[in-house]
Amino acid sequence: MLQQKIKYRDHQIMTFHAGAGDEGLLLLSGGPGCPSNFLQDSHAHYADPHFKVITWDQLGCGLSDRITDKSLWNIPRFVEEVEAVRQFYGLKKVHL
Image 1 (cartoon, rainbow, N blue to C red):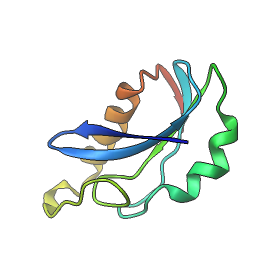
Image 2 (image 1 turned 135 degrees about the horizontal axis):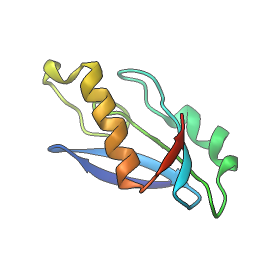
Image 3 (image 1 turned 120 degrees about the horizontal axis):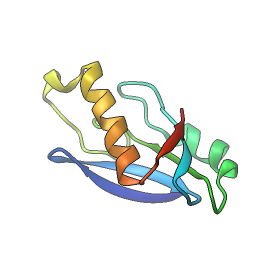
């Protein structure tokens, strides 16, 4: 999978992707604090020229920026981060 840092709010999050197209498999690693490395190789084979596979290290873990603001650890902000990744990759339809 290819690595791509993307801007999220005032931070950078590391994403990993393979394949193409506007439909994809969006892999959520759980967390907070759980990097996505265990998902990358095991799911990359689903990618093809018309279907993207994407995962990322959530803000605060893995290769993404570290944060100290504990107010960011809430479900609405996590949902916003998922949406930021979906929009960055231009996914219209996703499978979680």
